[in-house]
Length: 348
Image (tube, rainbow, N blue to C red):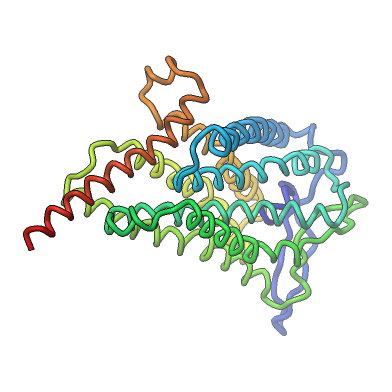
C-alpha cells in the first residue's frame, strides 16, 4: 500500500510460491462496498484528511505568496518557497484520495490513479532532499564562511533546487509504472500491481526507505554535527531562531514519515504479521505522513517569534519574520566570520 493510493482499506497481500514467483492471495481486507460512512474510524480518517487539505492548501499558499512575491529573493527564501510548493502540490491532490475513501471506489481513471500516487512520493522525496540541501548549505556557511559569502547566490540555489526536483521525479517514477486500476468486488480500485516484475515490491519499498529516509537523515545528522561543533567552538552566533525552525522541520518530517516506512517494510512479509495490524498501521502511518504537509507553514510562524509577539503581529508578518530572520542571522554570521578571518590573516 502506497501513500499515494489513499486506499486506506485496500491491503494487497503478496507471497512467494515454491518456485519463488510472485503470486497474489485473495485480498483479506477491502474497501467497504458502500463507502465508509458506516465506520467511525473511516469517518475520522476523512475528517483528518479534510482538515489536512484545508490547512495545508491555505497555509502553503500563503507561504508561497509571501516567499515568492512579498519578500526579497534570497537563498533562504528559495529553499522555503520550494518546500511550500512541494507541500502545496501534495495538498492539492488530497481531494481525490478523500473522495476515494468516502465512496469506496476510484472514479477518476487510470491516469489520475498513477498521477496522484506519483505526486505523493514526489512530495516525500522533494521535501527530504530540500531539507538535506538546507542542512548542507548551513554546514558550508558555518564551516567556510568566506567562501559561502562569495558563492551563495539565488541563481545557484535555484539550480540546486531544480536538481533536487529532478532527482525526486526520477525516484517517484515507480508509481507511474506500478499503479493500476482493477475491478474488486464490483468496484474499481486504484492499487499497486507488482506482478509484472519479480521482486519489484521489495525493490521499490527499500529504495524509498533508503533514498527517501535513511541516507538523507544520515547526511543531515552529519551536517548538524559540524554546525554545532563549529558554533560551540567559535561562539559566534547569538540567535538560535533559524536553527530552531530548521530543527523543527527535520524532526517533524522524521516523526511523520517513520511510522509509514516501518509498516511498508513490514508489509513485505505479510504472512509473518496479523493482517489487521498491518492494515491499521498503514492507515495510521499514511494519515500521519500526510499531516507533514500542513505542519510546515505553522512551524514557519510559531517558531519565528516568541509567544507574545505572535499575538501582536499579523499572521503574514509572523511568516515573513520567521523566514527573513533566517537569512539575516546567517548574513550576520558570515559577516562576522569574514571579519574574524581577515583579522586572523593579518597576523600570519
